[in-house]
Length: 256
Image 1 (cartoon, rainbow, N blue to C red):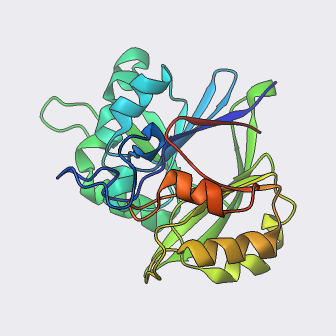
Image 2 (image 1 turned 120 degrees about the vertical axis):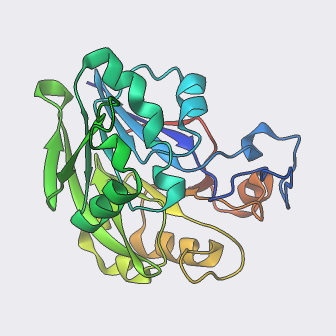
Image 3 (image 1 turned 90 degrees about the vertical axis):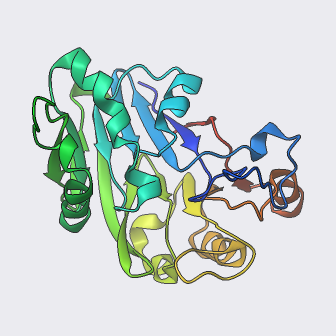
């Protein structure tokens, strides 16, 4: 059974264009420069595993005709990865079952605090989600639709971000941890989907130079750059990067 991944959103915390219409270096005539906040979804049969709940989740689902969510993986607790959780209510209404969300303990603790109304019934509004602390290795789904995951904690400034590794693919949306090049679980990947915020160095994210360094050390078949700020124009990156390093774009589909 085929496994696919869709990059639902590949933009930084402000997206492209920003709320004030600013495009930065990005050509506003290129639709691949329209970037919503980061989310991705893994699809295998009826098993639909969402990675992060972007604030733009509703439009991302409608654009990509996503009709089902089996479970949610959270990378970390920042707003641009979690503020779309509320949008998942219709899936609870359809199934009458809480949606299982997964992450490390500290991540889930912060999400439960900030989005408490999603996890406990308040004045007639039912809880829609249930938290599950992940292990280093775990599986989601049943039978032929099952997907196995490994997890890796990586630095994202002062926050610990969870990298998810599955089907010879790693998804690391927010990271400034160059020590990941020493981790053997990231060797021999088909796809490395990795943070690449700006040209300039940043205290909590990889910049372009960092991302290229990680690619050269880990040597995946293909590296996909995500969490892209308005500094980084799509066509500029395509023209100036090796063919096996590509900028993501919203709606990008990968066969894993």
